[in-house]
Length: 154
Image (cartoon, rainbow, N blue to C red; front, side, top):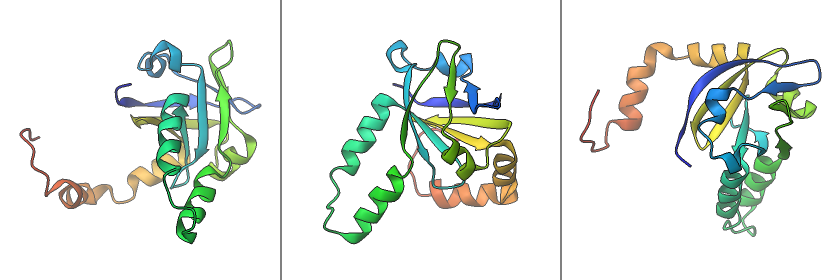
């Protein structure tokens, strides 16, 4: 699977279902368009992983030494609330209520696709997060990417 890209505004119905946008589904191989795993993100958002990508991450996590307290804590927190979800016949995903509450998702959500995941944010939290430090983006880019050797530049 190639890297996912895109930002999509979605409505969430009263039952907690949201429609996966066609533009996003087209980026996924046909076999990976139905089953996903959703969990808590590191910020106040949810992560939606195609099942195959979740299995890769789980394999990495399973290599951690669980005799180390910090590793056990990470494993528990990372898997807290992780739930397998399926796309229904109408192309919708049902978000677990506890995870919706964690992320503050109500009627509007933003799907932000990158790398191997789709972040699901409440619209308000996403707007707030993206505005924070927006003026410092050039500084952040320099800190994160400034020491890489790249043949292309912007």
